[in-house]
Image (cartoon, rainbow, N blue to C red):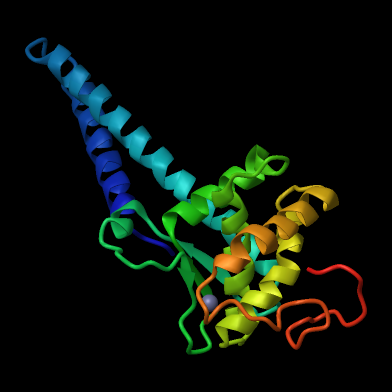
Length: 217
Ligand SMILES: [Zn+2]
């Protein structure tokens, strides 16, 4: 199970809320301080509901990201791990996502990537933001590492050719998905760091995974 600071906070304030309501009920006969106990219980309950809904939203984003990863890998147990707010505070890394190179099946995704992926799946398909396009692509890229591909250029180029499948799984029409793919290759791929971008990532190039075709990617 994925337990973070927020999980502990949500569980803690829920317990506090239950205790507060128990005190309201068990001491209801005492007029002294009754109103205060009531106000306290309501306040702690609102905190518990807020923390609980943030926790539930994190869990929902992570489930969606895991479904997206699974589109491009058959590795059993492949899943996504969405960065939590508390982790983001201490993460100075420039990477948007990574997979440990030890046969790991977990795609670690930056918090913004999971948020953008969620936004894409919930209405972003027709006119995705730059962040949403990149988020869909990053999931495709990390799935290649889960598949055992360690070369960044190869993982990136395979993702360039397969990212539309994730877009479709997230609710895009085939045309919208192909448009996302085309835009990533035209607008973002050329700006990738040299270890990622390759001249072989073109029609008929060494990294082209679909032999006979007229259009790339
Ligand atoms: Zn990579």
